[in-house]
Length: 267
Image (cartoon, rainbow, N blue to C red; front, side, top):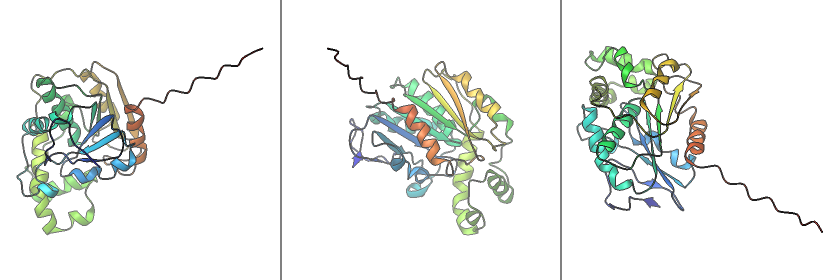
């Protein structure tokens, strides 16, 4: 069944409804990487317990929102998304973002904090440097098409069959460029120290986002922090899906309380 927000029953273009059965105890909002859409998380609902409602986020400019212009201002993107999420914060919630989605998740929670919204139970950040390190990357969004696509190819997140398809790439390029522009132009404004737990994920072979820099996210939260690495490169997400979802599940759901030991009567 669909699990909409208690305060607003309209269907949002931004948020795919969760498909789950039974009682939901937590919502998980999943933000895609640059050029990606909500379909990145299409199987997550079946990989997590029904008590966790998975809501994939669909920004403009991709999939069923392909005809809408993509946004190039990450702060404005986060603000629009925050307004869409407010009616769904009637339950405890967590946010997961991979690559660009991680930076968007960080700014999203900055926006929600400014709106005095309920804070999340947990924030999961995957394969993106904390804001203090992002300037180490040279901007690529204004490169000529062939050079831009070569940089995209290096990330290993777009199938070669897609990269070699000129007509398809012509359709995808505007959204990819917009997403990279949003990240590369982003500068945090008066960031608020996070007061919620943060888990950071990365790939052991990701040379662009190495573990020693991922650890820099710790300075942004006053709550608990941990980091876990998975085998793979920047896009370990698919190959390590089950292990990743298991880690998210154990983080969000408390361990079951063991039944009390039966007492023995001595007589």
